[in-house]
Image (cartoon, rainbow, N blue to C red; front, side, top):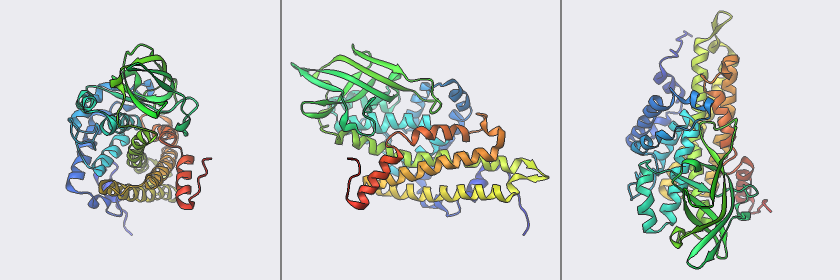
Length: 399
């Protein structure tokens, strides 16, 4: 066989070689156009800065209007200024955003799937008109308050409570691991009431509403997570999301966010693989590029095998979502598999980079750290395993 060493600077050819199954050809022209547009944005606006943002634990809120112009905020929602794109278009956008950083993709998910999605699905016409156009444009940022200090995987045990007081509501309790709250204009808060779980819109600056940033962190550093406290917060009747009753409200939003993770985690995995491949083609030891060593090639092959399988899985799930046939078990399968494999790819990619792999100028160690959070939020591995176990056996292992 004749050697034809790949050019490490020819990223397009490297990607074509890595798409062994020809998955790109399964995307429509519109889907490829969305992917290319978001990829160009990430290359121009995120890659040059992300190592510094991560190192300084800085979330670039100034990107919000640009992401709005890019059309990725509330991407699957229709009306009220929302983009109205397909699930697969959102999926390829999430992949490219997380190839830049999980924190950026998480912002788009919290803003679009969780906060905007809740208002779009369960809000009144007045609430939609007030918030959705500005949120789609990135002019107003939203947050989503569900998880509590003692109610993470089991939201049915939430203690935050809202009671009626004449025509108002009085909200008391605490939330934890809530993204974006310090910069959010409005937070969707889920609380127990005498009528079951209900959702409320709590504007920033409401008396009794306190936000505390959780830091320092070793993961998702280019993002912001907080603890929320509600001390007898008085809200008008118009703050209630009128159509949301029971846990179906927040869980429907979580399913949309989990769907984005199925695709997004592939972006972190792909970026880690590409960093390792390019380094292996450049780095010479014992008189040859380390990409020519058998052990290195096995690592690279294992990464591509999982990335190709994960891409087919994500695309199948995306097509099902667009067709209206997607099930929670399918989302759990996708999130469980793709995040689990992406974190292993990031870790293995770091080994190819050797000692230099601990420097933030190389992405795998940052992706590996971020994926520890992605693996935990929107349902841990254990939760998704038990969802699938219940689907297979008909028996719930949660209680």
